[in-house]
Image 1: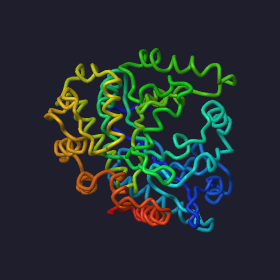
Image 2: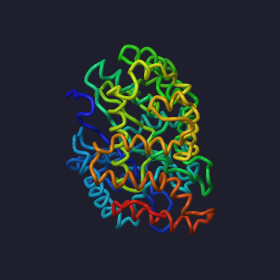
Image 3: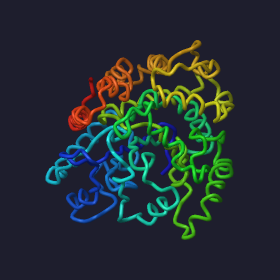
Image 4: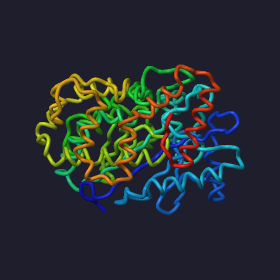
Length: 406
């Protein structure tokens, strides 16, 4: 069934499993599935939420079981499933951990591929790209799926999404630490995402998708180059171009949706869903052309948008946006920080947002991205004990569905 713009939504949340004692990643998602169903399976239908495996054996994904129109109570559904998973993991001395990166993981030695269903696809990915890296095994995200009905709606939505992508990490960055060190990027997940498929650059492109606004052009300019580039590697013909496309937003013509992938997972579903709601409301504003015409949105080349994106993944909300033409899209004056820009956009759409989500968003806008709050809490102390205490607190936020306050 096809849906119209903003009629329904799909949200996917990725979490790592960690050992409670050592805090090392625990590659036992298969044991979690056995605890739940009695068998190793890649997918669990748990009512309105579905559980599934990911590329690696220590990551489980929770997602809406089909499209939903109810974003008001979605965080509570996710939180309920998180509690159930943690109860199942308790006898295994394992728990779910939030944020987009494990601060102490060494992917070179700790990464273990999922060995069950889809394992042939994952093994092929590993053979081509060598998935022992942060860009593959230490990058938990939220995927936001937005429907379109036809080519006209796709063009409007894709134009708006491309415009907004560069500043989304200013809200959502939560991955400043790799291997016990400050990476210098508040969104280090997206920094490694840019190059983790460098062997076949056609797959990720410039992260910001190209200027394509209908299905035919999308196939010609994005899917066909990907298929051509992967052909020498995929001799068994097991990979699909929808699966291979790794831009920061991808068109899923198999289900008539655009999937946004630049959003780091937060400390709890309350924060994830509130960020999704704000992104959706600003996209509605762009699609309405109240701020800027569709034709003006379409004129932006991915290189120019990528330049802004590249700065935002480093400094998140404190990024100074100096591209006046970009700020003009939102009718905002010169030299505005990314955080200030989000605050302005929030004021414009907040009447469309429920009080519950407003409270969460106002907390984030006031206190900064989760990456900023993590760094403030560490206060320059990068000892293992400090990480253990901090991330245990973040795990408590996940379990209780509460925001992290340093």
